[in-house]
Image (cartoon, rainbow, N blue to C red; front, top):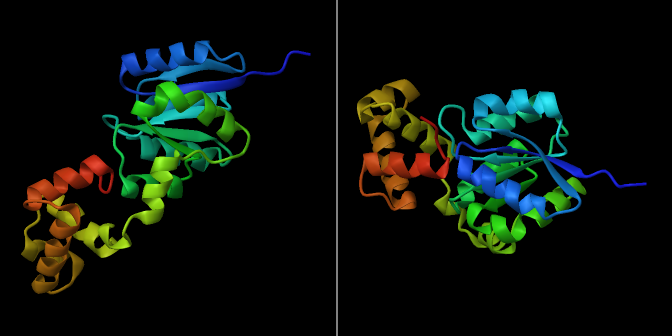
Length: 208
């Protein structure tokens, strides 16, 4: 009897990346790319229609991002297996993806060499986090990760709130907001508020 191939759905807004994935998987006798989607909006609909064994999901996409799409899929299909793909190597983003239910995390620079193995491991019930990323997670200083209160401040700052407006919205003294903002700049190695917001969005700490 011929063994069933591992069915894969690829979600990415870049056609070249999807073509690259298709090319890589063509050489695998046990894996089959059964569908593609180009946005987070299409991801859940494609998942419902195809019910793939494993989904490859880009984190950074216009509109509904990969993490939000991952949440939607896992909310409706708790056993869904999703591997997140990204160009960014950021421990905060990785933790967020794993907390949201990702079964794997792969940098796009690693796709050529590790994608097939990642799919096999995840389909077999395992988690796939490349060794160099796992080491980063284990050794990263927890102080480099923004606290919930700092994230709350940064979200408001990203929406144009002044320190005084942030203080009013969060019902804390303005000095507390200034202190949290100073901590945010230090942790993110940011030059100013705008730079901090840009870094946080890029790393997936906050969404705009």
